Length: 302
Image (cartoon, rainbow, N blue to C red; front, side, top):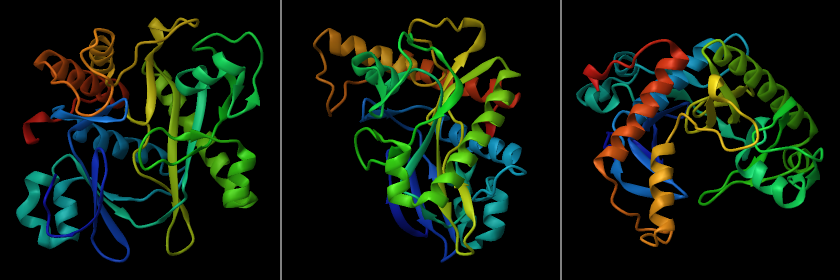
């Protein structure tokens, strides 16, 4: 865990969230990695920097489309705004983001362009998504046209639960639900088009929103990263099965093997990870960053 001279509000699977003042938060992404809801003992090098800097890149692309919470994502700018962090530059470099504070809406705004993950699991079992019928005869990884807005409840631990838009309306009200759905669809559409130019399919993704002190609804948390999205290589896409993704797939594959062999029961504590799995997972994150942004992450400062 990162130690900073700020009040720690919460520590999650990946991030620490610190209070700067009544209007600002500092988010610091670690190299911790989880799979199947279990946090591994080992760290994946550069993962936290990839998540932070990819989010920052996307927020700059989306700034004309949606208000967001980012104020700064480079250490020098953060220290200029919060001077008492000047002795902690190494802990901030690459992985910290200074943000506007918001009241978070307790809903994950999921947009699905393809039938995969938990949506495919439910559809295969019952032909539904969040209990609502889908078209018959769909195959795994089939494209939705148009994409589906599929909200979910935010879970403190374990998996989020898919809910209907009606349930979301009952919780947040019709006006807020309409705004969040509209923004989510617009952001996904813009992200999908930019990623397609780079040979990447964004199969699905989740967004979070909050309302700031002035009443503005803002896009918050991580955006269109390998942890919040499912990225596929367009030139390898083939509906009818599972697609390889640009995230922690090497880690999941290894853990699946450990479970199949009876060496791990799927619960904490996790098995030790070989260096080859850690390295392969790190390279996946770095490759996703390079493909999406067109730039290589500067590893010399991290």
